[in-house]
Image (cartoon, rainbow, N blue to C red):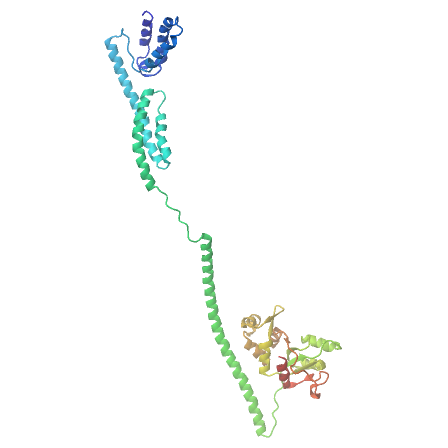
Length: 407
């Protein structure tokens, strides 16, 4: 008993609360209790293991501290008050970190899976400071484990219903196809507008061309009637009517390239008569007449009428555009080449050629040389003059017959 007095004195000198609450008291009590039993059990070697389990687990785990008998009643009351006050402080400190985190995981769990929701309270329990009493922490863990699932699980189900992501809407057509259709629609609208405008212009121009053509035909008809009137008037007066000299000739090459002198060869080259059965319109003047006279044995020519000119241009007419032979299948071909001369349609071209107008040179140069076929029924004899029963030379108005057979 003399050995226990210093222990109590030592405990009273230290802090009064620390040995009561914290688990650190256990190491201080165990070394003192065990040595008391050690000398008594030492002689019996086999009983030593039986003493240790009787003292250590139960006495150490007991959190209640029994004050020594020497303490007075006042000191015991004061120590009990201090212990109760410290317990309340610890309860407040434990409640603050345990309750507050419970509210935060509710918002987080709404976005996580159910397994993580159930694991959240365990993490909250582990967040308690290790310095606190283990038994207090265990009791708090049990309370939290009972309270948290009831408060947390229900809001999770509600949030899943409200936060449920909508199903992805797949468009009926991809964006690239929609853009392509938009471009096609825009282009079609522009094309339709331009084509409509072009059709309106063509309709207006066509009316002008029809009026101009009617005007030309009236002129041709008036000229023919005038010729007939003058011939009848001369005959009535006992005279002879001599018509005006022709100003237009149509020339056709009859011979090949063999045995042709240089001058006729050069003249036919200037007239663009490079092959057999090629034909061209020629404006008759002194120079052209001399050229036709020199090359007369290798060509035949005459004075075409309106019908022959129109048939040649309509059937065998080709234009020369940028040095290329282009078919005259649209008035735009003529307008692009001769529009600056006032020749915008094929009737203008025929009128300019037949009447040998002021722009005959440009109009005739625009026309590609006519490539005629062999005369239907054949020729009589190309080595003789026409007046001798042959084929070459001047045929005057009989040129229309051979052109119709060759066209």
